Amino acid sequence: MSTQEAVTREQWLEARERLLAREKEHTRRGDELARERRELPWLPVEKEYTFETADGPRTLAELFDGRSQLVVYHFMFGPDYEAGCPVCSSIADSFDGVLSQLRARDVTMIAVSRAPLEKLLGYRERMGWSFDWASSHDSDFNFDYERSRTREQAAAWAGDPPGAVVRFAELCGTDPTGFMTEAPGLAVFALRDGRVHLTYSTTARGLEPIMTYYRILDLVPRGRGEQDGDPTWIRRHDELPVG
Image 1 (cartoon, helix red, strand yellow):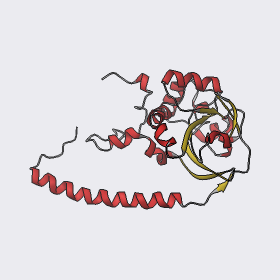
Image 2 (cartoon, rainbow, N blue to C red; image 1 turned 90 degrees about the vertical axis):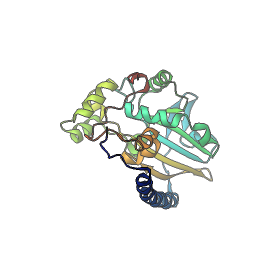
Image 3 (cartoon, one colour; image 1 turned 120 degrees about the horizontal axis):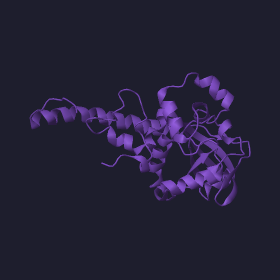
Image 4 (cartoon, one colour; image 1 turned 180 degrees about the vertical axis):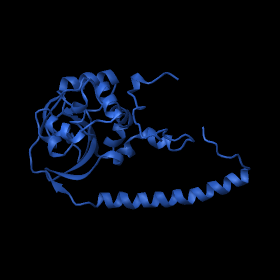
């Protein structure tokens, strides 16, 4: 636990007011970035993509499900995986419960992975999620949006994999090279006049806004507890220690 000094109420309020001023600056800057994000130019999607879903084959436009905005979470679950990435699974926990709120604001949010559909649906049932999950197994979608690479590319890129990669590969039932064929990401699309456009994309720490637990952990004294940079504390919710 932190060794911060204990102070009087007056001293605490003074320190809290100083931090509040900084927090307000951060909020205003966040509002500016959100506006700039919304004002990005749109990139027309020229290629036709087809995905396998629980309701049969669907084009990218059909994944909007009658809405004008689509958020795609690139969930790390490659063809060689036996289970989804634990970190992606924790992120899915975060957005699965807000789907109805998004739909009410004209937004459809889904996950897309390269694993065959039957693997995805079986894992979804295990985890108790309700979001739609599309397989891009027979599509170039993940490769075109740079969220997947071939095993040859992954082997050349990964070199000697760090311990976290080895551990997560084991948890996913694949080898480190197989694990590194996939990468997480988020892409936002808009439908206008029947045509799909890419409006935004992000990965790495850009995904933190949908990692609800990180925002909460940032409020507590011990924070995220990742001072050593090891993310392997993150587990699937059915594998967390009871406590």
